[in-house]
Length: 214
Ligand code: AP5
Image (cartoon, rainbow, N blue to C red; front, side):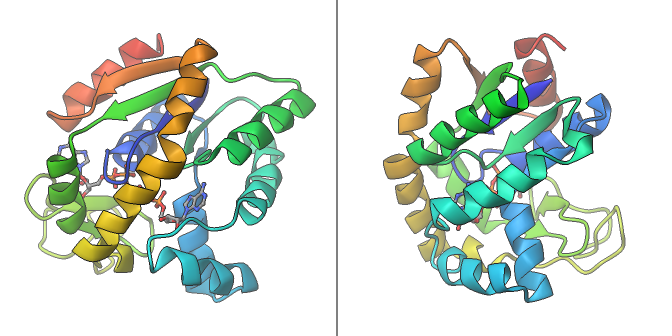
């Protein structure tokens, strides 16, 4: 299973990808998570990425393409993967095509999460994330069992710096300008499948499995 999960910030890509990757035994490759880990570790990549992430801008394509190139060459990605948050620009999509052809594999599907803007704002401003294991919750729609504590690893949950309302609006604009054009490209390639991204998390989970024939 080689999939791309595509959609605006807050569409539920990470929530669904984490569960489905576990179910299918493939890695969940999320560029946002990889960058946040680099930021937390204070690496040169993290220090550079942070200047873009905190203001809701995209990290430069060459940095991201290098990161994904290294990750997709790891042995655990040989049998499949779910890409979450990549590609996000036309140059990134071009780089992915080149990389997959070098590796002698092809994408099976690009799953688009269709969610209205009002719902995205509600989701992102109420999101709480685990800095340790990257699990995500929502104060109303998907709360942890114990207030402010990760169900999975027991760490204290945080609000992401870029989930403040002004930055969320900026991220939605960046999505519309730079990422939404990928929909047309993958539609033309016959790879795009749309899934209704509003409703119960379990219902959406089932819709994705059906859409990709799993
Ligand atoms: P990234 O981490 O990729 O952020 P994003 O795409 O903006 O996506 P999110 O993580 O915000 O949303 P999601 O769709 O995963 O939603 P989630 O499942 O958490 O990127 C962050 C930054 O890193 C970027 O701004 C950029 O700077 C940089 N970056 C990353 N990749 C890059 C790239 N390729 N190129 C350049 N720069 C890059 O759900 C959201 C909330 O909703 C949660 O609270 C969840 O509990 C809740 N929820 C989920 N499903 C439902 C449901 N069905 N009903 C109700 N609530 C739900």
